[in-house]
Image (cartoon, rainbow, N blue to C red; front, side):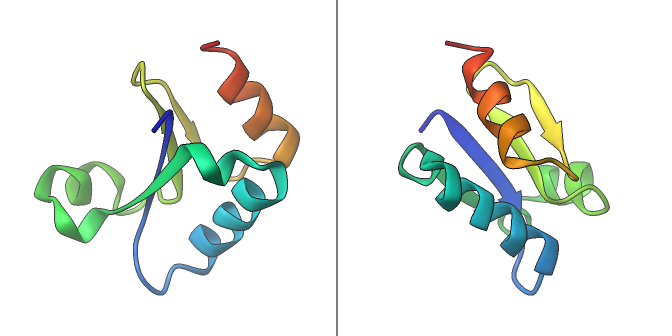
Amino acid sequence: MSLMLFSTDGCHLCEQAWQLFEQTGLDANAEIKDIIDNEQWLEAYRIRIPVVQRADGAELDWPFTADQLIAFNQENS
């Protein structure tokens, strides 16, 4: 997967972020990671989610638009 979306259950902003992935077609190359599954993720992202991370470790914090998500994905291409 080239992109990870850090999220958790019941996060309406995370649901909106995933809708942008679907809208842009990036959902096929993305994976949702629930921060509750990892103590380090929970510590790092509990007040920041949703956060998108590329394979190179770069991150895009919410709020972001579909255009910003596409550009973020292309920066590493």
